[in-house]
Image (cartoon, rainbow, N blue to C red):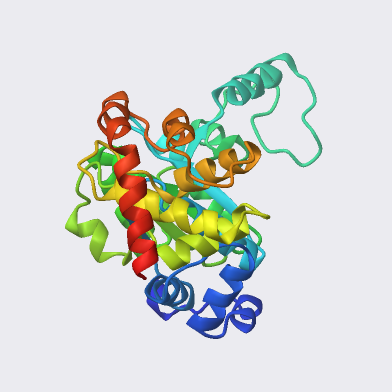
Amino acid sequence: MNQTSVLVDTDAQANVATATALGDALAARDYFADPPTALSLWLALRLGRPLLLEGPAGVGKTELAHASARVLGREVIRLQCYEGLDEARALYEWDYGKQLLSVQLSRSGEARPSGERGPTHGSVPDVASFFDRRFLLARPLLRALESEAPVVLLLDEVDRADPEFEAFLLEFLADLAVTIPEIGTVRARHVPLVLLTTNATREMTEALRRRCFHAFLDHPPPEREIRILERRVPGIDRALAEKLVAFVGGLRKLDLRKAPATSETIDWARALFVLGARELDPEIVKDTLGLLLKHQSDKEDVTPKVAGLLTSRSAEGAAQ
């Protein structure tokens, strides 16, 4: 089945008829996507293609999946990828306990539920009867294919999975179908919106990239990050939000092990709001650096530079 010819479901298409409408709908649900990201997402939805979201950790890749689900009124089915992930955890596995119980019941002569298939009392169980659909435990990929309604399927941090698992995904991404040897090919009842995220801990293969649309999410520009803070931290003073964003922007220009992402900026802003801070005092900044910087070496490097960063950021703001 070639999914490039399949369009989004009618209800969702009516709600987000254009990429601009989708971007506005996301913003109404507290997610501020830039126009290229909104367009990539809209095209993936419209054409039934997976979308690979690439970028630093904490810039909103996972949240985009949840925001999209809120806009479309869909369930999110999430598969958190990790080293060692295999088909049994991602697609399906057989319920061996239930299979064994079925054999024991057939041998003991216990009555089976009405309509249930399986070996009769005293018979030798047929091997095929062990691999009936009723013994199959659906994992995220199979659940997304068999869902009675369209879903958002989030394959989160796919770069953390082994290359072998990435190879397994190719059939799924190309055809939105999987083959279960004992049952056959299972195709999607409804085309899911498939979003894959990667923090670039390893390079994705060209085969996977060919099967996906692509969007790169980076740290937002200052004005958009200020809008995010005002929405996520209700009541924050605009001037303070501007100073927070300017300071974090200065940190991102330093050679750090991990630059603070938007999620850290939001956490820091919430903390300062709770503390009742009206200004970015150097001492309170130093005391709360752990909310922005997650490595001790980064904190040790930044601490003596705090006053200078605050001064330079203030000077830049005044100049603007």
